[in-house]
Length: 191
Length: 109
Image (cartoon, rainbow over all chains, first blue to last red; front, side):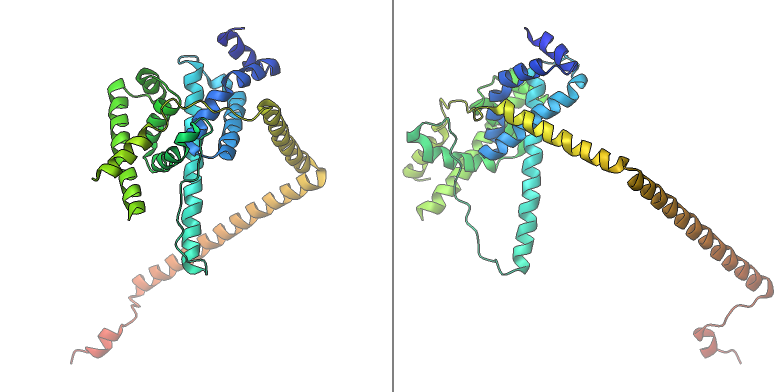
């Protein structure tokens, strides 16, 4: 069964077609979500939400772009929403801590270990992921799609609806910001 | 930047070269289906609850009551406003302007 047939069957709410779609693209969705969210639990949760939305709103997919592009867009948008919600909660908790007893400074050490990283690079990768976390939404998206998902500039441009040169500029800025973040991290930990 | 820090940055930047793609734990589709069923059941429960004759009747009564309160309070506000307008009109007509403290203190001889 090809992609177009699967989509037309899913529009008729065919369970078997949905199962094939989930099993074909679950890795791609999960890996992207994990790269952005840096938590296996959150990535699983968001991946499920992505496929639930696919099932509910497949009729709105006009087949003008590739199905994978549509899936990537849903995944990125859901993952970013999740991060924003988490940040709002953190801010609220911080305000609460100002008025409460819990006013000690919390250090946020690198604690995410991507399962696809070699054991010898584990510590360095965790520090890099901590730096990725601080990038802007667009830079983070471009970096994750390029370095974690291994997509081409053309594919990234299609997903983010920007030109190849804009992707290149985003990645250059992301690299520069990562180096700056890493520099401050190492300077702080050298001292 | 010291040579040591520069080396560390380079190592960190290269640490994800050749990273393998992560995949969800086995039986992802089963968990997904269970969650979809759960959420569907939740909506069914809500609709069933709202469809109960007693709940539906109580909800309608509540809506009618809220409407009545809103209509009653807005008509009352209109009446108050029109009474105030009438009072102002009569003050204008008979020049019954109340004197201010300034006027009492600056009485012309």
